[in-house]
Image (cartoon, rainbow, N blue to C red; front, side, top):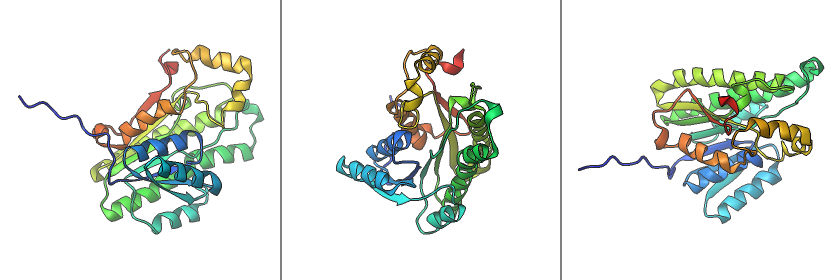
Length: 254
């Protein structure tokens, strides 16, 4: 009797790009993909952080390079993709948040969040796809969304607007790209302890309100997202496109 073979979670021979890769979720994504055998390019604005991260991946036996890139600079994004072979995997991770009540938001706040979380994500994906089509490469786009792309939250009007937009954009990407063998999905985490979120959790009332909503009873860690990234990056998710892998400890189930 022939048993079906489990598709591999390995990424040997594939090239991956992770934006916002110097710390937090981006660093974890890069480490996971490299451990699975991908050659990973870590992109961020801060040279020192991504160089240290790439070196650490190399010391752990992986293959990684650092690339200074401001994903909000459209000219720089275009130039970045022109000069290199296509990637098989994109992790669209760079993002920001300015939490406040909606009546306090000004135009500068709006532009800062929407330009990075939506506009930059769109055009990084577009240029990545153009290179994939040029080189005949099939692969996987992974956009780091949020549970806030599925529900609302107090003081999160800008963040929710951006992450709901990312979810719709992702579904349309999947439909455009399916004929070319390119998949597009999001990972939608709950609150993850990272350098960006750590200051928020020093507020005990906020921390308690979050833990009441996360039914597994703890904050998320970057390690909680690494398996999701590996799954979506490779052959194990060959039939998965246009959807969201929600890693939220049960927040959105209620």
